[in-house]
Image (cartoon, rainbow, N blue to C red; front, top):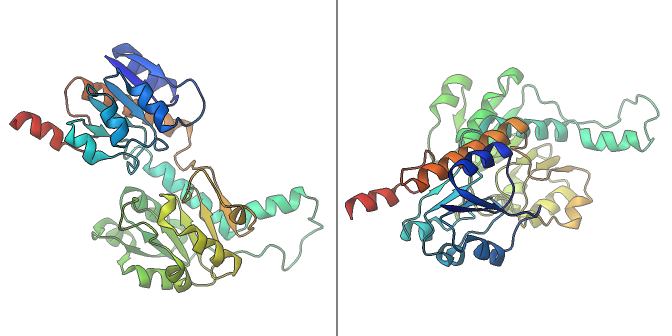
Length: 326
C-alpha cells in the first residue's frame, strides 16, 4: 500500500511506516497548498496530514481508493470528518500524548506574561538595565490568585492540576462537570461571564467549532479585570483577534500569551508591536519527547487503519459499524 505524508515528522514514525508501506514524504519544509495535497494523495491508500493542512471534500474525493486519514495532531477542525465518514474513510488523531506538554507550555506563558519575562529580556539585552529600581518591570503575583479554565478537558484539567503548588482558587466553564477538579482542587463550575469577571488568569482549552468561534470578543474582554491575563494554546479563532488587539492597546487587560492565531500563520503587525503580549510559533506540544510519541501514535493509527482494523484513536468509528452492518 502507498501512503502520502504532507510534511516530514520524526524519524521514529517514518521508520514504522516504511516497514509496512511505500511512503512518499513532502520533501519541502513548508505546508503544502491544497492543490499539492490533492496531487500527492492521488494513487495513495493512506494520507498522513498535519493541522496546517486543509483536508476538505476536494482532497477526500481526489482519490477514490483512499482508505485512511491519520492526523498528526489532537484537533481535527481542519478535516471534513463528515465527508470522510460518508466515503467510509476512518480518520484518527493523536490525543493524550501531548496533554502534559501543552499544559506545561500554558504555564510557561502564564509566568512569562505575569512577570514580563520576554519584555525584561529585551530590555536587558538592549543595555537599558542600569541597576535595581523599585518600580522597574512590575508584574503580577501568581500565588493565591484566581485561575479560570475555559474548557476542562484533558489539557484544561492537566493545566488546572498544576496550580496546586500556588494555592490558587480554580473556576472552570465546560459543558460537563469535572469531578476530578472539584475533588482535588475544590474547583467550581461557573458560567463564562462569571469566570471572566473573577479570574486573574484565563486559559483557553476548548476545541474550535461553530460554538467556540470568537468565544472571546470585545464584550468578553471588557468583562475581565484590568489586571487579568489571557492565555490561548488551543486554536486562534476562538479569540476575536482584532478585539484582543484593542484590549491590549487600551489596557482593558494586563496582557496575553498566545501560541495560536486567528489567521495562522499570519499575525497582525499591530499585535507584533505590543509589549504586553507574548507570541509563540504554535509550539505548545513542541518537545522532543512529545513530538516523537505523536509520530509513533500517528504511524500506529495509520497501520491499523490500512489493515482494516479500527485505529486506536479513531474519530469516526461509525465507519466500521457501517461496514459490518452493510
